[in-house]
Image (tube, rainbow, N blue to C red; front, top):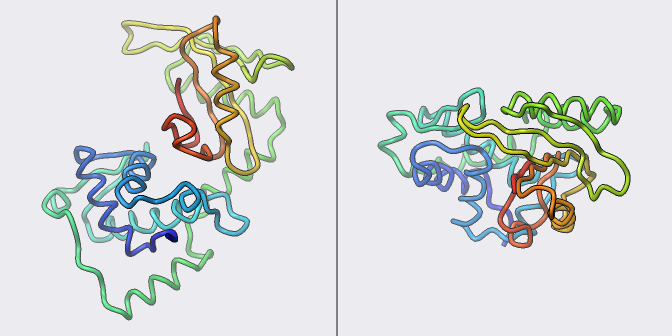
Length: 230
């Protein structure tokens, strides 16, 4: 099985948002579409030439754009896609004619039309000084609700780069160990397993921020995306 086309992904994307209760993050949509269509790990992780995004991510992005232009879904600043009143009435849309499909195939393969901000960010991350990348991760965690965030990464620490305290709703808080890494290619399950091993006896909560997708969803316990919590 090859990676579904942008047109083939449009209805599964709309249905995934319906099944998620009317709104879903990009990662949630991706995982639901993968499960719905039975997409293999190899196809889900196929990359597009020298780009950072996978073929599936690229085509799902176009599918969401198609649905948004039809007025069926909308997205917030936090990357959450939700159904519009019109989208709540529809669970599928008719495919367009052959001429439109041909034009969409051309656009799908045209890198000049692809929103480039994701790849620009990844290039910037890979080119950052290590200390600057650590400060960025520290800021990101603080923006996410962590306090007392300290970067402590050092050789032989099992991949633990620091710790902080996560406050939930102003009522409870708990310590969390975190890992922030940059990788060329996908992140293998061994990285997660090593991080979990380093956490043993120190904390039962951990957060891993990566700039790549986990290589195998089955082997990594179902976590996917560029960040995961344990």
